[in-house]
Each structure stands twice: as C-alpha cells, then as structure tokens.
Amino acid sequence: MARRRFFISLDRIQNGVAVLDPDQAHHLRNVLRLGCGDEIELFDGQGCGYAGLVESCGAEVRIRLLQETGPAPKPDTALVLAAALIKPDRFEWMLQKSTELGVRRIIPLITRFTNVCFANPESRRERWRRIVQEAARQCRRLTVPEVACPQPFAALLSSPDLVGHSRFLLHEQAGERLQFIPDPGNSVLLCIGPEGGWDDAETRAAQDAGFRLVHMGPRILRAETAAIAAVAVFQFLLDE
Image (cartoon, rainbow, N blue to C red; front, side):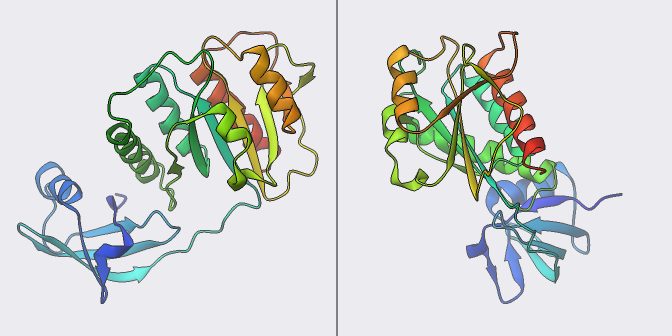
C-alpha cells in the first residue's frame, strides 16, 4: 500500500522534524486514523519530498524525517495558464485538472465578458491555493502551482513578469490550428477566455502584445474544457 502523503510548508521543518499544520494534522489523526510509528510521505510544494515516521500524534502532530526524496526535475518549459473567471465550481475543476497536468502557474483573468465577481477575493484565492495543493498531493506532484490574484486582461498584457514568454491565445475564429510550437523557450503563456469569448478589442490588443491566436478545431467547448484540452495539447507538444 502506498504511503499517505501530506503537504508541509518549509517553515514547519526544523532540525529534521516536521510539524503538520492543523488541517493536515486533523486529516492524519482523525480521518486516516494514523498514529505513532506510521510511515508517511511529505512534500513541500517547492520540489522536494520526504519520507518520515509519525513521532507524536497529540494536539501537535510531529514527523521525524528519515529521507529526502527530491528535488524533482523541472521541465524544460514552464506552462503558465491565464484563464478567465467562470462559475466557481467549473473554475475550481479547471484548477484541479491543470495542476494534475503540470501547469507551473495559474492567473485568473477578468475580461470584457467575465460575469463572475467575489466579495472577498483573498478568501477565494486561499481556497484556490488549497485546491491546487490537494491536487498536487493526489497526483504525487512535488511542486504546487502558484495561483495569482485575479487581474484584468489588460494588466496581463503589460505585465513585466511575463516578458519573454511565448504567448498564445485560444480563439475559436483563429486562422491557425494548435499543432506545433516553434522554439517555445523557457516559458509559455496560454490564455483562455470566458464563456462569452473574447471581445474584439481584447483580441486586437493581444495580437499587438505578441500573442499568436490559435484554435483547436471546429467544436465549441466550454471554457473549462477548452482550458484542460489546450493544456494537455501544449504539454504533449512540449514533450512533458
């Protein structure tokens, strides 16, 4: 039977001992019914994994680290997914599946036809972080993708953090089919629009900012389906 895995932030590891945060400790102790002497795996979200033994299982769950199993090799090309906000349950499904497929960073977008807003964006972002963390744990990934703050599409186009990325925008009316990526470099930025599609002004602005417009065939896909299908195609083309 595979050892159970838990997330551990680096600041909770000291002198070869890891202390689980309250949520992870509750899951170990009360859900999985693990106890002292059980062997588990930990991952820090930064590329390293650890094997350890449960040393104490009271109010504080302490893990004695036995072996470091990372760091994980990084892919040659990092894939960044910038996706327009859609209905919460669909967006969260997209976060989960894109994490499983190896996306390095996820940027929620506010576009012309975005019709979703949150009263407390930071609380929502914290929920998104937990979703990608759990998805990384489940698929045995050692890294956890960063989930950025929601930002307007115009801000993305001018972001200095994304200078040098190969840029693609999925558009159903694009003249080019997504089937190869010439010289992607170290990073690729993939943009996915909302259910209502891209506004014409957004499309022109993206082209002016160096984006290639691509499509994936004649079928009209839901935004979350398009995102995951495109990520899978990109990872295949990037040989990841």
